[in-house]
Image 1 (tube, rainbow, N blue to C red):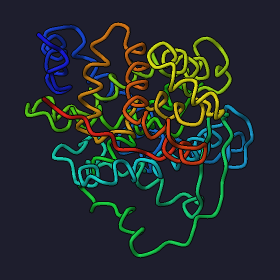
Image 2: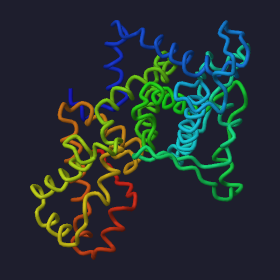
Image 3: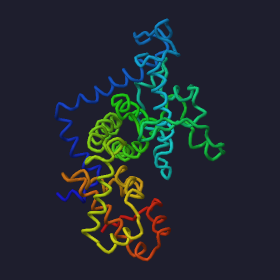
Image 4: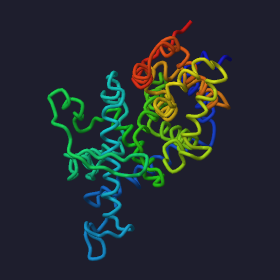
Length: 349
């Protein structure tokens, strides 16, 4: 079988034919347990699920600075949640998919008999909801006042009625659970661009059973993928052999082998790979192509044992596609050409 001709959906089909008949099926149950422990139990307002929590005591209260304080943890989680919420609401803005309601909302979360604070309520009720929160790769959290909203921007943040949830809300939950389970890295901007194509593939699968479990299946696929690329999101590792700086330099060394004339031109103009390849490599080209083409590229990428060598070759091919403009352009024109998100066209023969 030519894996390059398979869609990522077909590739997922092959994977889950194996999973459906293996011990990995209980992973979906494990994800349900994550939801209970990290979203439902901390947000319970009443003890209707048999889990009680004393909100305020002399030992633990909202002003307690102790790192082990439940309140301290809750407020730090809110900072992470606010950034995730801001990013996932704008996931693939050119597509309506992520704003649409899912056919399989999480009943564990939306059960009307359960009166607890959902992620949606946490975002709505947080005292920081009128501010913009961002955590960069250095781990620094910045809080700033937002720009004045316009009627057009308001529609971007509309939520569905109670009992429904949009696909972006499912992605938000996946990223929040991942951040809770991986406090060393938590959430960094850009992870939403990685999980988006994975979730879209599962959530649009023609098999209704797999579509129903898209959230849990996406979470574990995303976790496995992040195990391979998480170093790209950790600034302290940038200059190590596994860091993003080394990988960006590999783009140029590969380009030198494939197209020395173009390499020398970029060197002459002092155009460093950091100016453009950072986004390409960190986000696995997810912002450079339309989503159907991202899925096709990822199909080949994930099928290759040396997938990141393949990624370097794709990056070089992207430079080669615009080599004539780069060879003729000056520094300003070339920087603009490389930094603007060019939607490359992936022609199917």
